Length: 222
Length: 284
Image (tube, rainbow over all chains, first blue to last red; front, side, top):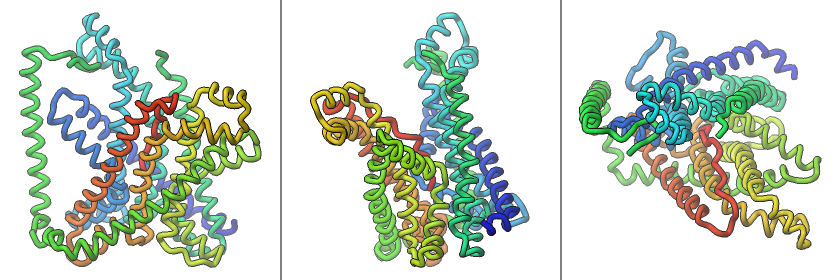
């Protein structure tokens, strides 16, 4: 326990980085995932094809590989640079990797959300004379949005846990910090592990409860 | 074809779609060309970087050993995780609180924390607490078993709970014991229903073995991102080739899952629909 108290500021800083990584990647993944979903349901074969290839590639590739590709491939070989500071640069590259990977899952969640809306809804809307945009705004998207709350919540939780993979390119978030604390305090490995596990529970459990509550509250009754 | 978003297009709609398809295709080609220029600028299309993949001994000595390590870690972890999932899934359905509650706590705990911190814990905890030297293989398998076993436990629980109550009631009424009900009535039907979800989770497990890279386990990703670039300075080509190998394996196992799902939908051995796979995001 002593080690946890002694290193409390370090641990707090590490989790703050984990939270920032999560939020930044979640925002980027939501935007990219929405664009991909729009492409996948568009009437244009080219866009559908590109989005399908993207989603299937990223979903079947290990996240570690994606992050290593972003960190070493983009960062070292192709010299993609966001910042003078090396650690900030790797932070951004890991955000690119995390959001590129998560976007594939966001796209699938949104697409299946749209698929939960029965065709009859849209046909009824067209019969009433609603235009394409009106149909989208008033009929399809409100129903689809309610159906994707729960899946997006589990994606956010998965993303919170997945930010640990940024350790692969040396981003000092929670898991890498835990590893260095293990090395510094060999006698309290168990306490440190349970401390970090507890902190992850504190991050993920309320998210799960909140999204569960929200999706039950907004559920579309059919 | 009329979908929820679009009506079947008429002549004008078809023309508009064709024009827009052309515009998007042109934009896409421009984007690809830009990426090509960027890669070319850094000499990534230099044949010297790609040539190693045409040599047999590069595959035999560097890539295939990594692939075998990945597959053996996945196989060992799957062989332990599946029984783990069955034991804990069934334990969570127990009538005895002292079995149900601890089993539930274990499953929820390991599902809620990142796999990577379990792997680190196995590595450092094993030597610090037990005085054992934990190899990276053991550490990876340890983490994979606890995490995926817990997810599998949820699949098993969902599979058994999806059976109609009448099955249990009828079995008890004809005089079977609780163990017999589970073994003879519930499990055979539930296994058919949850097979596709189990196989999908095993794909996640296979992908997650790549986390071993972080603890220097000599897996496929290690071959692609450390060993090959160290020999040929070809990180990007090597990572792309390794990614293709991962994708091929996962797609093949995915086809197996789809086939099992179709079979289980047709099956008359069970009264329930296949269990939905959990959101299999994959933490590796």
